[in-house]
Length: 269
Image (tube, rainbow, N blue to C red):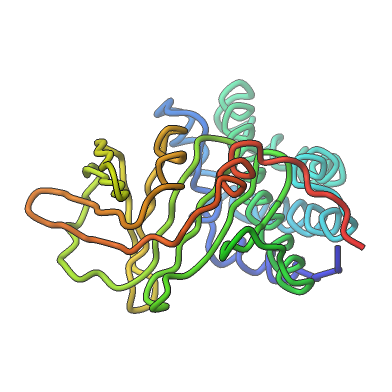
């Protein structure tokens, strides 16, 4: 994999975006969430920033050396034990070590999520540089075992489709112009997968966000919906009185199998 030198960019993002960059928690415990948020405020902020700078640069260095995000996370942490110990000592004195350890544990979990994003970005850049392999019109992006996706555009180039998984269920991303209004905070819709001989309709969780002048929809799928997409000619999202319809490019069964398995990438020569 080419060396992409993401370290300084990553560190600058962490320093300017924190705590947003570290705002993804694996706990819903209110006390732990609140304590983790305090790490980004005085008097803990300088020590938190010091650990963030150290561990992010080390993590990206390991990724550039060929490690996956899973393999790089713990060595990156161990390389920054002094910064971690200083932070733990100050936080532990202020709120007690049990609460401090839970908050710092969440900080590390959030770092792993951020590192996963760094690894994905480096793999995508490397695949694009080499030229991705294709399945029909869909470009393949094998990131690591459990993370992969395929990507294509509609024939009129108005919509981009990404279909894949990130250590979980398949997800469909659609980016393009919304012909109809989109309701702020909308989280549920009916997904119609339309094929020549059938329409599969299921209630789904959705989210969306603006991307430049377009909208990106995120739609988690079940395996049966993933299979149904191999026969689809179009899909529709219905919520209340709003319907957004999208032409859907031909999805080969081999692309569905690739997403279902998400195998480790093969070496490319």
